[in-house]
Image (cartoon, rainbow, N blue to C red; front, side):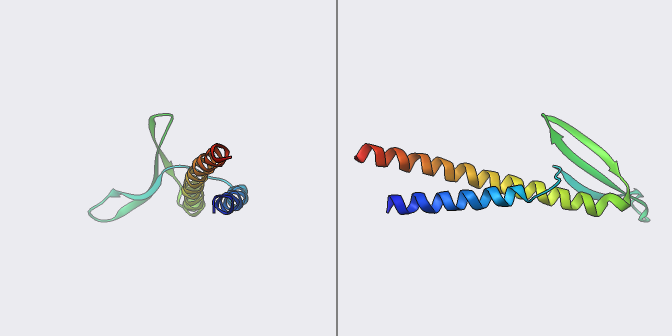
Amino acid sequence: MTNKRLAQIERRIEKIKTELAGLGAMRPGSLTRQYKDPESGSGPYYQLSYTLDMKSRTEYIRREWASDLRRQIRNYKQFKKLSGEWITLSIEHSRLTMKLARSR
């Protein structure tokens, strides 16, 4: 069972690597629509907020860039999810490998 699980983990890690390679441009953060006058809903603009190197940052974004930035943010979230899964699988792989070596 352990060897079978090791093979499953290795296959999944290879799939993750392929998915990561195809992600494209990415940016952390969240994009929100703000208004200069919230009561009347006039003067809309977009605001990108994120934290990088333990510093919070805010950028103002033109409307024509909003959809591209949403895609980049989705890519970043997918990157974080996949890299977290890769780490979890790597830990399990390492433990199973050590367990196999002990039992021999």
